[in-house]
Amino acid sequence: MQTLWFKTALIGGRWADHVRLEISDGLISAIRADVAAEPGDERHAIGLPGLPNLHSHAFQRGMAGLAEARGPAGDDFWSWRDLMYRFLDRLGPDDVEAIAAQACAEMLEGGFTRVGEFHYFHHDAAGRPYAAPAEMASRIAVAAEISGIGLTLLPVFYAHGGFGGAAPGAAQRRFLNDVDGYAKLVEESRAAVSALPDAVVGVAPHSLRAVTPEELKAILPLAGTGPIHIHIAEQRREVADCLAWSGKRPVEWLLDTVQVDARWCLVHATHMTDAERIELARSGATAGLCPITEANLGDGIFPAAAYLAEGGAFGIGSDSNVRIDAAEELRLLEYGQRLRGEARCVLGQPERPSVGASLFTGAVQGGGRALGVAAGIAPGQSADIVSLDPHDPALVGRKGDQLLDSWIFASRSGVDCVWRHGLKVVEAGRHIRADEIRQRFTTTLVRLLAA
Image (cartoon, rainbow, N blue to C red; front, side, top):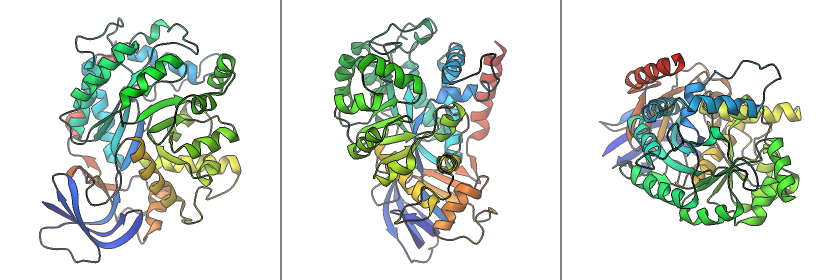
């Protein structure tokens, strides 16, 4: 058994002082508040639950910053996607493993302790399945093991290039499966993560444009009780194409066609009508918000103020991994609402006026649910814990919810240590295997970008 003692810690969404945590086999076995530290306790000032990162494409960390030059006709999501396709054509299994390990290490350094890897990159450069269909998924599992991050693996079903079963493009050849091939991929993905502590496997129809209604119906049972994730309503063109195909908008079509419940995570859901937004909030599904990527790609701004007022669940994700920063995802979520509404402190809730606390606790709860785990600091749960640096200039003299407000809105980093399933993986703000992971990443990227 190991013990951690915090001067103050966020337990069950509320602050407690002089907190002692007992950890056995990676799980929190006991929590006591208002107690003195005992000999042998590892002592820290500020304790938080780790944040779930509910949506990531880890390999895209390798192309971060390479799509920031304006083209002659302007740029949008679709021109960015073309560049992404060209980048992934260079990647083999070893490359994906090296890039994913770097991305996961950075996630942990920023306060994320579990990642939902929306993994759609399955085949070789010619579009042929590897001898082991889950070869690429197994490399994500290895990256999770190397870094120590918790993993919810979401193998993606991708069969078409547009609504109504349109033929895929040549650039999508590394993604494609039929229903039988996908069932095999999910089965082998479960085997690939079996050695990881508390790993979860779900299913992920890529988007309504990549799956027919019949295929969607066929693959959903493969989730069992696990999570179901889907990209939806990210771009206005996607909405227009869905209307042309079905007469309905994407979120409307999904809610009308399948039983969307708490297992579901609708990633982005940026462009909704009021009626769609209200029904999504009522469904129990989680809105998977990725503010840094949504800003980088020019997607638009999610209607968070109204959605949260209606009781909607949300979590945050790093998506394209152009920048990996848990606090910045939360900060940008609030700032987008401020810019759109020309107001301040928009997402603070009546029962909890602190914007930082409202965002953080909402993202822990919604993100954990979306990734198929119980998140937070509680007995019986995985010891996924973050300590903040009390000497950070932005945190000096703060207490209670001021700590979250100041970490999210004023700190440049703030994370001191991170424990994942009871093991310390970050110390003094740096991953314990950072040098090894970064060297491999550097060697990989130098070779890839010279090709």
